[in-house]
Image 1 (tube, rainbow, N blue to C red):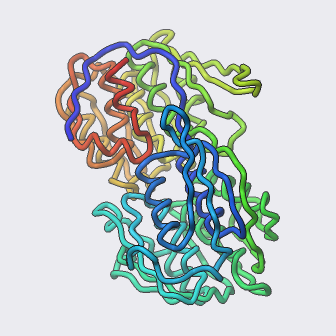
Image 2: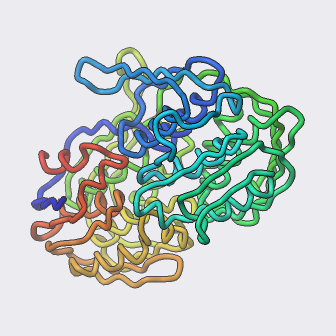
Length: 436
């Protein structure tokens, strides 16, 4: 689907949707728990629905409650009680993760706990995303694995989990989160030790650990997350949580307001959350944006909000995005509207997302008149006045949303191809921009 967005000043109040990372972790923990969990105000997106479909196919029962306006109020999730409940899929022999890499990696490890072979597939982008380091680690822990030669789907795993020691290099933190979520559910007495010679995206590991600590999981780790030791024999307890709002999604309406010289107030974000992408607000503040956090009462409960506005010319800077690779597309757009050079570095792992986001951003920014030089681990962007035209979103939700935000401040209309990809994490975002 192509979408054309006219230049206009973006402003208003925007309630940010729930976090994809939190939603998928809560779904998997609840799906493998002993009892019924309630997940309140989850993200309703294509990626979240993919994870929900996997859970249901594994025998997890889910009841959906809607608000009066038809939005999801909660999922009641009846867990299968760990590896004991893993059986052959009940709907389809292949567990289809759609476009969700997070679901693929995390669910792979959870599925490997049982003695039933379980097979995973996905869309054409997932077919190119390698799980090889994760599969090698699972194999070292006693799991039988098979995949194509590059570690891509179709992938089959079969336990049981025998434990022991593995080495796991993590260009994406999802590999490590997968092992951390599964290892506590191994049999009692099974110890899993993980050496981690490389770890990107550390805040997501802090997020995963926060769930494990709340579950009373016994584990130890080094301060720098280079080694973990996890005891088996745990059973996940039911959850009753609201899903936090998503900082990754919040960056896009904030960017749209900033590059179009407008103002937006983003509601529902929690500055104390573990999400690394909250760093976006520090980045744009350092580039000259107005950023102000506030707190108010909503339905008798305290709630944070953050306002972002254009307060004068923006300027470039140098930013290490190792912890926050998902910010590369949107920070690239802010840089395109800023004076001077912006260097984004230490983010080579942005090349192994839904697209090679470094190459894609360089190519597409060039189409709208922005000088951009690729580095092995990032980009150097020289700010200008981006013009309109047509860009290819590459079926990548973050590329699509970044250029949709750019369209608000461009000098002429901008057409974005594969715009439907935005629904992967932020349904309604394109309508939000067009209707503003």
